[in-house]
Image (cartoon, rainbow, N blue to C red):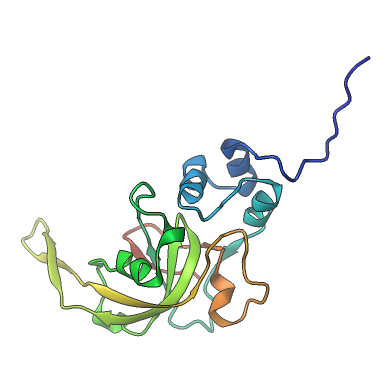
Length: 187
């Protein structure tokens, strides 16, 4: 007699990273990075479902100017983002970044592997610091930034139930182009 297996998934069963990444629609290393940071505590059916339905967020025409997206690059072996305080999270976005002086006061989305984990505003811009010199001998400058965090998401799988104001960005994927660590959100 053949064994009949149920096709209904067990909600407590862990899903392999490769399968979960394929369902969510991101690459395996990005999902593993989110798990290492503690932003996805368990890869079960509910977590994968929440990530798959997170969707992509773009700037609206009413969001003028569009928010700046700061990509955080924190090594999870050194410190996990879940364990960071808001001050430590703000310091990890410090830079220096190539931003004009007109960026002061703009809305900011802090992202890990394109997922928005915090929102805030650009409070301070430092003086220009020479980063590198190009082929023509011109200095390419950057500025240190100070970000005030207004909303923060501890776990990507538990987005706010009411998407009011800045909370509408949390837990979703930011659509940005290619380039540096700070980019404007695409519309």
